Amino acid sequence: MTPRRDWTFDEVSAIYHQPFLELVYQAATVHRQYHTPGEVQVCTLLSVKTGGCPEDCAYCPQAARYHTDVKVHKLMETGEVLAAAANAKAAGSTRFCMGAAWREVRDNRDFDRVLDMVRGVAAMDMEVCCTLGMLTEDQAQRLAEAGLAAYNHNLDTSEEHYSEIITTRTYDDRLATLKAVRKAKLHVCSGGIIGMGERVEDRIGMLLTLATLPEHPESVPVNALVPVEGTPLEDQPKVPVWDMVRMIATARIIMPQAMVRLSAGRVRMTQEEQAMCFMAGANSIFTGEKLLTTANPEQESDQALFDLLGLHPRPAYKDAKVPVEA
Ligand code: SAM
Ligand code: DTB
Ligand code: SF4
Image (cartoon, rainbow, N blue to C red; front, top):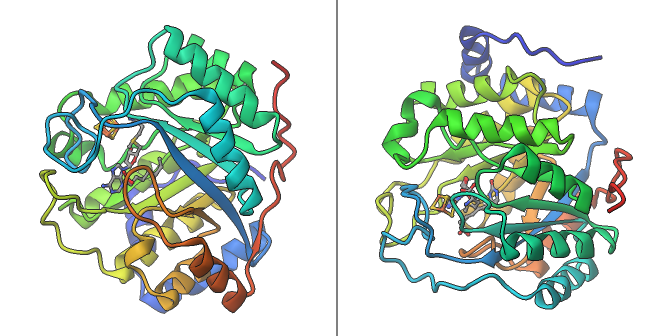
């Protein structure tokens, strides 16, 4: 059954605002209808090109214009990236996501190298994902042909709040890339960040935009802002776990088939808090000691969490999306 795409703001708002335990119960119920309980997708991120980005995303430590501790690093060599992917696979990860601090992809030798990386990781039977900034249809197609499984491109916040966070591109630019990704038949990974000074209506608005796209994203990352010294958002207060759970649960209910990813921010959450996120329908995480540039829980503590909660990793390509032959 195709999930609903005609949600209204008031409906999503009513879901988000219902009593906390009702919301979690409803989300957990939907989760069990569409997914295997206890199964969690384990993804690993690698920043293949770090820092020096021309964009002004207020949350981002990699924007050249802010003075952060991030060291600029040109595009990594393919061999180094494949070695990191092999380590991630050995540590139990089934999806490898490569991130580049680019405004957009350019048709140059760096892109050719990223295509090589994609081919290499796909040949290791891991799901391959990239997040490289804006893409054209042709570039999305070339990534698909190289074996990419999914492309991450976050809406980050609502259309109304967007210009408070980023001025160097528009919401429509973001939506155009998502369209190009869809056209190439890649899976779409798109979500956002909470804790950037947005109103609750902005959070609901962002989820509404995602849930009313022509097709729901296959994965929806929910990030809690990691405030980084030197960025305009360095002093933002920590997001209450209640808000994180409400976001996850609402995403789960309105986009029931999507993988909902408990993304940035886990390092500041307790085991109990993370357990509540899984209860509310989160079924994907990033593992490995780093996200792109900031800290993430250590492998041992995540293993302990999986053991404690009886969680098990989702196999790669479970939904039978085999990589396209290059
Ligand atoms: N440059 C590409 C782009 O912006 O699409 C790809 C990399 S960018 C770092 C990927 C995503 O990381 C952003 O869209 C944002 O949602 C997330 N992100 C970046 N910095 C973050 C932070 N400090 N806290 C939480 N999420 C963050
Ligand atoms: C997403 O939604 N979160 C990840 C991934 N997609 C690319 C990135 C989180 C980055 C957190 C800040 C950092 O480590 O630089
Ligand atoms: Fe650049 Fe992406 Fe960071 Fe924005 S989020 S500054 S586009 S790396």
